[in-house]
Length: 586
Ligand SMILES: *[C@@H]1O[C@H](CO)[C@@H](O)[C@H](O)[C@H]1NC(C)=O
Ligand SMILES: *[C@@H]1O[C@H](CO)[C@@H](O)[C@H](O)[C@H]1NC(C)=O
Ligand SMILES: [Zn+2]
Ligand SMILES: [Zn+2]
Image 1 (spheres, rainbow, N blue to C red):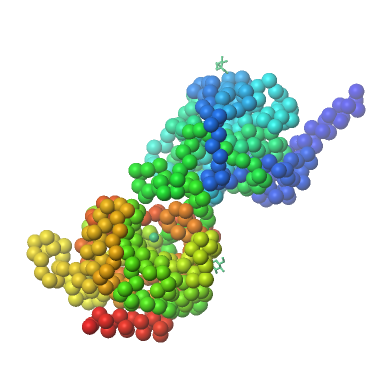
Image 2: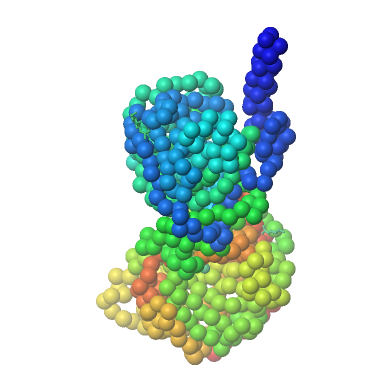
């Protein structure tokens, strides 16, 4: 009798020791060592969380609606506890329940808790979608009815967890259920506080579509990582004010409380019947479609949620000088017959070149690249609209042109899957200023302000040269999908004008449209192209679509480099520009 009591006590002590021995950071048993803990399943084959890859989803028509019982009950929250790993809310016993949703019977809801990152823009959801990590994740933990916790830990579907992504909004509406919830957050560990406010689970979930979810078989995401969880991860995030989300790390004193993604090991992730598996072209820049920029990571084969995305904001002072960034060698940029056709893709206006004609090398690229096409990003019809993709010191320019080049030794398919398979050059475009000095085409339109434009047409006010040719083509591709052959003489060198091509920024990034392949070595030139103000308006006006630019993306751990000298042009570039000057004068 005495002996068995001691054994029982010992085992309780050992279990407690094991439970407090693990952590996310700052102790011996960080996530990669959880598998070494006593009785741990953390090194198993069906671990959670995982990255949900939309291209690998399989629709399961049996994954229909859930039945939720008492999710609207305002008396269901019992107590709050900071257990040193998370912020947990315990629910009243036998009050909240769920079934359906393709689950194996009914489950009783026990508690909900959260996973988050830190206060400085480091997201902390556990599951990710195509590599995209949301700011936070909420887990609602449910026990199969009729089982004790011990029994459930032996049943492959003994526990059902509902995972909700949480996204941050700057919206000042500090929605009350979340203010109430976060008011309980506390740094005192293992102190239970009674919840006295009226609050329901539905209040927290808001208007998330509960029919759209992913399902897979996994584990608890904390030690002992028992492989007993039927996971449900809802597609739509809960949207909560950023200030409230910051309360989690600030008030609990806990940061980066999420387990890294685990191997899928051949498991299938299913999508519910209501999830639209999008086709890759159903994206847009605005709110007019389901896949606006914050949702691009949900598209099939999307890399838009990755860590080296473009565009970015370039902080000029923080760019690292790099002597290897020398002058470019441009081949046939002044050739007036290389542009094959111009097309309105519905997202941009694109000029497609005869492949193999134009090439670029040097500029620290380390390879020869073939120029494929150039296209534009622009803003709205307003005279002071800004629509560039990159920004310099948070300043956005009116437009940006992208010259897209592919490594000459790779096929396009290989290039988009190689870290430096593509080299894209971005140049800002802005209106000529009205001062008499400087500017590439100031001989055309100095000394006239915009008020004059509408009242009289002098020759000073008429677009000329290459940009005039380009504008004529714009008029011919007003409908989406239209395409016209370019027969008039037009070269890229003429469009670039006098821009100093020896002074630029360099960083590793991605395509700025889905699938956002992280295959791009970016060059962003410091000097902008100056064009007639009317031309800036022609892009939104003729195409009928506006604000075709992606918001800037986090740099994460990337560095931005800059050319070291001031205006160092390689000789070969100078000679090509000279050719251009000559042809222009003629
Ligand atoms: C819902 O809550 C009420 C009030 O606590 C309780 O009597 C009832 O059993 C609950 N229903 C379910 C299905 O758990
Ligand atoms: C880009 O990434 C490669 C490695 O993939 C690295 O060698 C190179 O220095 C990076 N370039 C820049 C500009 O960061
Ligand atoms: Zn959890
Ligand atoms: Zn672009």
